[in-house]
Each structure stands twice: as structure tokens, then as C-alpha cells.
Image 1 (spheres, rainbow, N blue to C red):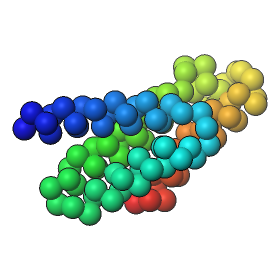
Image 2: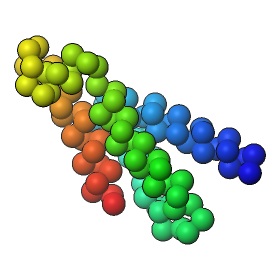
Image 3: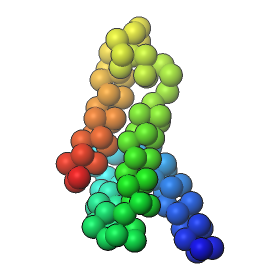
Length: 100
């Protein structure tokens, strides 16, 4: 139980860190997503991997700043910044959904 607790916390932190990556479809992020989806196949890892996939989706949206989020929703702001912010979220979300 101690190692499971330590590694699940580490995996959660890695998800949060890699979803903030600004590179489009970074190799490290894609490898992590592949490992999560692969883990969904195993009964003993399914709960952890499903939680990590949900965490990836949540932090993809959360990594946007308040200004970027309002720009994506159609508020004031730099049009290119809002397009870039929306694109980063769309890339992470589509990467997760494509693998599922």
C-alpha cells in the first residue's frame, strides 16, 4: 500500500506537469498517455489509470490562465493568444480521447 500511494501521487503530479507542456503533441506527453491507456486494459490498474486520464483532461483546461480562458470563451483579449490557448487544450483533450 505504501508504494502504491507514493507512485499514484507521483503519477498524478507527472500528469499535471506534462499537461502544461506547450509543445504540440510532445513525445513525453504522448508516451505518458499511451501508458495510461495501456494500463486501462489491466483490471488491477484500471482505477488508477482512469483517474489519471481524468486528471489529464481536468488539468488541460485548468492550465489555462483566467485571461486565456475568458478569451477562449469569447471575451476580450488577444485573438492569437486565445486561438493558441484553445488549440493547446484541444490537442491534449483530443489526444486523450483518440487513445480511449
